[in-house]
Length: 302
Image (cartoon, rainbow, N blue to C red):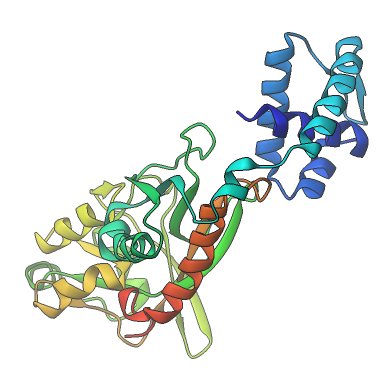
């Protein structure tokens, strides 16, 4: 990790009196502040702070480290970033993470356009179904479709993504067609394996309802659940952009047309605004505009 940033974090903790206040002053997540402090103690080879429920205080090693950190920051403040001054073009490697279905359906198209505009930037796109740790996995930006945001991370909204409930004609012929959201409790519903309790939420004319659903097949990837639905394994709720081709081909049938499944937010998620590379800042701004100009790729309405 960056020792200059770690020094800045340590000084902020001492001056602000808490890690929470330091995170706010640095526009950094609490998780990142904790991680930088841990790294600073590892580099120093000693515990730097006494922690209690009421306050933080410096150890003897912390006093010495604080002095050195302040000197380090003073020297850093006098330095000019030669790379930035010599070359104004965006450059560098960015590591992005998103789900496979979202990556194939929209993200790679946006990334390709960004790289055409900024050919000196490189992007490593990681398709992950698991919940990743941005710091540990060295991910600069995660693109997620979710309504459950981590308060320790920074999320920039990009778009809204509607969902659709659907099933194969063969499943409906064998098990019947649900007429109300409550009927889903009697059906085999295919859910995400990392949800401890699956609640499918709906709205109609201002009326909201949340239905607990379950089934004998779960997975951590949207495309797997859609394939299971096509094979007649059960009913799915999926982003409409992902299910739309299967609905258009007749392989899946949309259900509960009078009810609107809860829309999901599309977010760009990152750990800190501090010392953000120019390429990452440019990519964030680009994605906000790009999703606004290409709503058909997430189907804002259907």
